[in-house]
Image (cartoon, rainbow, N blue to C red):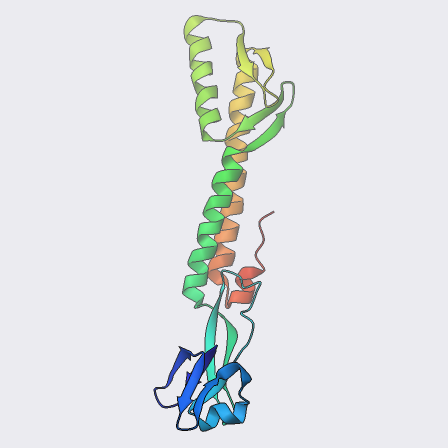
Length: 193
């Protein structure tokens, strides 16, 4: 059983206590008998659950005449540290949104968006122009293949660029909100849409 040794000022695993009166198993001793022998029962609160990454748990020790008590206090972390965490969340969100996004292009269909898809559209435009082709195969968002002409490829390129600009504008709004947050609660209230 864990008990607090009042002389050594530490927690110890004790099964029994020996003194001039004999050997006694601690589990059968009362709190008063433990205290007379230099030990206090330990009362430990349950460790907090549902602690967010914007919080930290501080152990709080109090010693009364009858017990050694361990409790926990949940506090918000430092605002600068919380802002760095939120900025990293935003970075991951934007990367995932940019790379795993799709839009509907009028007259074409639904297409993937992101930097790699923009490069692909540019390369196909250059290839069609350089080789005087009327159409070229293009993989749609649903993985179907569709024949597209130069005008449609340029529409796709413009749509991907526009979507990228829109997402960066959203990112800048979130960055401003993070920067302007006055406390951790304001940071936690910022949700990605």
